[in-house]
Image 1 (cartoon, rainbow, N blue to C red):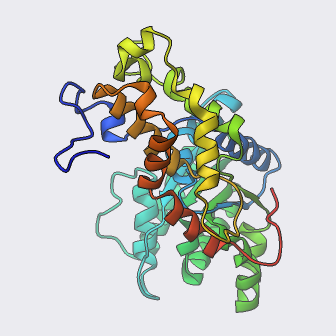
Image 2: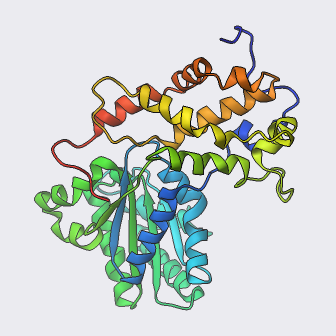
Image 3: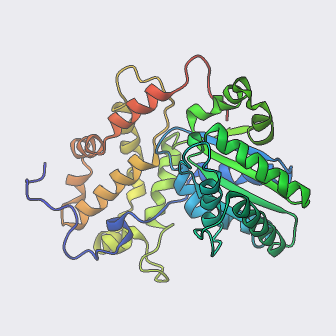
Length: 337
């Protein structure tokens, strides 16, 4: 255990290092599957679909850091995509605020100018038409993160936008990124009188997974050793830049995937009733702490002993997070995907 005055980040580590700021994202098998699935939906010209999963698995990070670039690589050029993290628009008369939020996400220079709701809707249609033309096609993708917060009013306003774009022969595909409970929303919407919303935007769905086994954990942890870089353009990985001497002597954090996986499973809550999938939130906290402890001069045999690994995993909040995931897991049927 550390002393009460212990500081995790050693003074010699630059304060702008991604491991210090936690401003980074590692590629995972779930990201690869998500991009492939959304690409298939775009190929099939779906009007809408949903990626759902438990909290803190890395869905938002995947959208913010990987989705647009990987889809652009898949299609060989610019993707007309707008990514919006949902924020509540307000009361029944707040359609103008809803459209303003979408204009801001679409990087319209007059997004916050004073306009009527009708004018803002027209501006949004024009902006989406501009994006589709820039890509040389007749489609545009709207990704809504935190879509479980969308109200019926907001879905109906989105239907209006979709219909106006259809009249201009522009296809809008809406990809919703949401919590695992959201997979039941199409039925709930239909029962509440929104069957046309569900049929248009929520007809199909795929699950976003956490890290499912030791092999996947090792793959993700290898990102610290090989799939990362700091400073930018240096070719030096996070592990090499944080513990250069250990790196030169052959240390690789991915080599410790097996004992970490064992401890993640050992510390699942009593009567845990969710999937054995570890959130990227937990993995990043644990790996960050290991590397920074090593950077402070502690021995590998000390930091990565069985007792220390157990303490680090417990310190990460792993048990509490998995208890929350278990409490939110739908009962009575196994999630597909």
